[in-house]
Length: 149
Length: 149
Length: 149
Length: 149
Image (cartoon, rainbow over all chains, first blue to last red; front, side, top):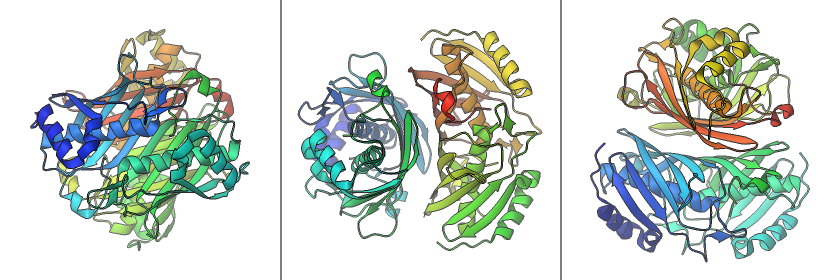
């Protein structure tokens, strides 16, 4: 699996397609079959009582990471949508940025499968594990699935 | 399975614990083993290009519905956390409110399991299906899992 | 969703395609959007120490039920394969037959989604919950996915 | 995470607890936080029309691998049961032995989480991905969950 988009090209695509939402994410690294994505945790919005990050925020990071690791290998024209997501919440995140280390496990004609571990930056043990299936065009025309952000 | 909290008691609990986040949700119905929860879709925040609602917004609704259907049957003292969530995105949501029709399938000493269908209000076919496992106290002391909002 | 195969036609299809494996299953009921499938638990093979039925046996029932509820609505020519399965094991099964009550939640051009509850016959509470995504032809040509039995 | 059982000790435990079922498996390697398990595919029983291995056989391998990677780190006294399993079937397996490369991602007081890739021996790309949650004693007393074999 060879990437067809660089970190800079993916970031430009995100900014163009998703506007200010894109500002929450930093594409740290794209390599063959993998991508690291950081979510800049906003103390105002994302921190919960007890000093943690909520499940939906972790889900958002996982969904965007799966989307981007797929796009990085098929190009920006793809309107991929999520068809299935499974996430295991394993440890309480610290109130700091989160990083997803995503792998593209399969890139088929109709489906991509990726998985990842999520880490609180500076912590050794993963806070969550996620796996996602994306549907690739031309299925986008059928109205199946969900947009990642 | 007999509920121990009413719709009004759950709503008061949400407002107390989660502040303004609680305003996004309407607890429509609590019956033995089930709960209907509506997410008030915000045209400014939640609608995406193409006139749809994103996957993370649907995940948030599923997570809160699983949390509330569990609390409705164990009471407000419970600090339950999500340990596993699986969601199938089946159809593109309309740009309207979403309703989760959740069932509490198991209420054990340590784990609860619930599942649900998500609907765009006024539409017949479900847009998504979700199942979630919640860990019940005393596990909250171990720092496992994720807060729902 | 209207079935295009009866219980008898599905049973004949199973016997033709899967030989003696088909003898383990009884297709109890086919109705629009749903199917009940019974697995005849074999005391020699399927019962474990402690008088229970193992997880893989329950998975097999779930996989075949998802396959048959899909076929019942698309016809016997379909070589559908499983692409994703999630199962929650909720209670210890009794050493008796198991029944899956499956619903077909979505029948798209490329994917079907079904879910189900599994019961020990004669018991009120479900022992497991499962949801499965099947890929429909022409994807079979790509070698993705897994045969159900 | 430090293993407390060797490959030989795990194999002896399997043979004692599961009898001839244990003969289907080879525990290839135990290292801190990980285990490789091989399923000896039986041409008579496990190969399907089209020369492939079925989904339930792959599920069985995943379930036993998750069980053993947990036991390897907690010891043979544990009567762990599966509470949740998710599997993505990505490619058609070859009619040869399967190997699961499992990682123990979390070992908590009540739950363990592991994931793995499954390979057809001698093939480079994984045929499936699985993640499983095991419940650890004392929950076994509650009758939740499923035995792995």
